[in-house]
Amino acid sequence: MRIAILGGDGFVGWPTCLHLSAQGHEVHILDNLSRRWIDTELGVQSLTPMDSIQERSRIWKEVTGETIRFHLIDLSREYERLRQWLADHRPDAIVHFAEQRAAPYSMKSDRHKVYTVNNNVNATHNLLAAMVEAGLDAHLVHLGTMGVYGYSSVGAPIPEGYLDVQIDTPSGPRTQEILYPTRPGSVYHMTKSLDQILFQFYAQNDGLRITDLHQGIVWGTHTDQTRRHEQLINRFDYDGDYGTVLNRFLIQAAIDYPLTVHGTGGQTRAFIHIQDSVRCIELALRDAPARGDRVKIFNQMTETHRVRDLAQLVAKLTGAQVKFLPNPRKEADENDLIVKNDQFLALGLEPTTLAEGLLSEVVDVARKFAHRIDRTRVPAVSAWTRDIARRVERDPEGKALKSVS
Ligand SMILES: NC(=O)c1ccc[n+]([C@@H]2O[C@H](COP(=O)([O-])OP(=O)(O)OC[C@H]3O[C@@H](n4cnc5c(N)ncnc54)[C@H](O)[C@@H]3O)[C@@H](O)[C@H]2O)c1
Image 1: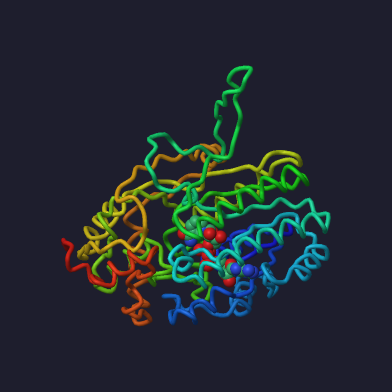
Image 2: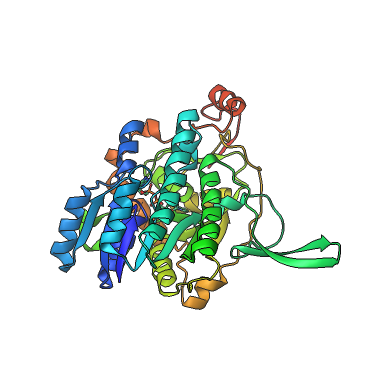
């Protein structure tokens, strides 16, 4: 297949490009490299040394003989170029990663909120409108997040996208299928909730074939393909805005920094290893909906864990200290999370769970590149509200809270 990977220079996008290219697909990356600019804005860099996208692609060609093509396009601001690109290249499938994806970054300031909404909602809508205009019947696979559902404990498993509800009508109760209600906990998650409605509309109005993957938090860094050459290495974020919880614990352990647990650490989250993430995308691409079908929605995760349990696990493995800090987010202290993921299991996904070997591999990568870490960038300081910001500022080190080893 000819596959356009939007956001193919990113953390999940790059290993996906390699995975699909290794399987013989013709891969085209469309990216505006904004993620690299955000590193510059924040004054941080990937823990792992990343080459330019052109250099990475050159190495891939050298290692495998396969070509990955790169097109510098901003999906949210260059609608005409995007439409023309689609009309000229007519991909069979499109994988859409190209959004601002950090909740803390989206909550940094009003400017970051506006940027995240403009970037994410326009990128998705421009893509959908351009597909219709170009008369393209490509299968669109989008990366959404489990986080759109919020983290309140309902006590029932989160289904894969849809919920049957009973509505009272004058002629008696009627059953209707609705999108499982979202309850976004940040501006970033709000944009992903809006994406869902855009997909529902374009599938129903124009017959676009769309799969939306509600992904858990991705952990790990290497995949089989990124291991093939040191310059194919994936990006690895450790800073307070872009680093995700488990990867951050592993990096913190590698540099003898206490594992920073926010609040009680009673938050339960869904996780998936990066190797499984790329495999799920492959499986989703093979299982395209037909024209006229409703949007196909998968929960792309393999396990759930409570944050403080993860911290204890990493502490046990590495001897690190665990530190409880004031939570910069507005969220429930404790929640349960039960998630259905039957569809990917039925398609043949064999989950990679939190094996100690893989956890240690990440710690080893972090130790190897520890000299690249700026310790002042490790704390997560973007606060969800002004009140929370004052509280976090009063006690940035969590001194009022307890520290355990
Ligand atoms: N990393 C995770 O743990 C995780 C979890 C759940 C869902 N997701 C979703 O998966 C997708 C990829 O995540 P990631 O971690 O690889 O993010 P990332 O920030 O590393 O990659 C996103 C890529 O998209 C590009 N991009 C952003 N806006 C663009 C635009 N307007 N035009 C063109 N390119 C643009 C960036 O330059 C970057 O290369 C995101 O949509 C994210 O919401 C990620």
